[in-house]
Image 1 (cartoon, helix red, strand yellow):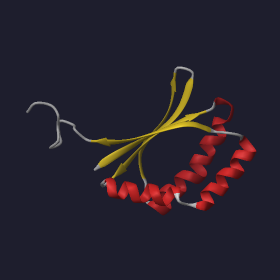
Image 2: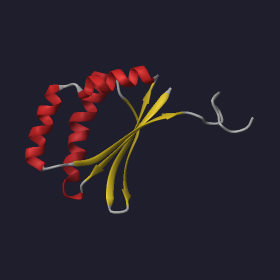
Image 3: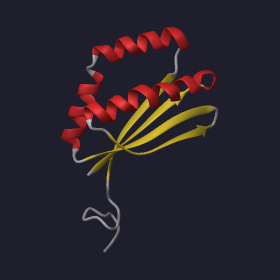
Length: 114
C-alpha cells in the first residue's frame, strides 16, 4: 500500500466556498466514481498560508496513476471549476502532491535497524 499526501494552499476570503465545493462535489466524485480512499483530512496554518491537506490510500502506484489520470481528464470538472471560479474567485494557490512509501518499523521495508 502507498499513501498520497495532497496539500492545497487555500485563501481565507473564500475557504468556506472551497470546503463546500470539496465536500459536496469533488470528494463525492473522487470516492464514488474513481475509488479514492481518504484516510484523513486537515486544515493547517503554515506561516501566513492556510492549507487544506488530505491523505489518500492506494493499493499501488498503478492504481493511483489510473485514478488521478481519469479524474484530471474530466472535461466536465474543468467546466464546473470555471463556473465556480467566476462565482467565488481563485480558491486554490499552490498544490503539492507527494507519494509516501511506508518504511515503518512494523513493515518489511523499515529503515530502522532490526
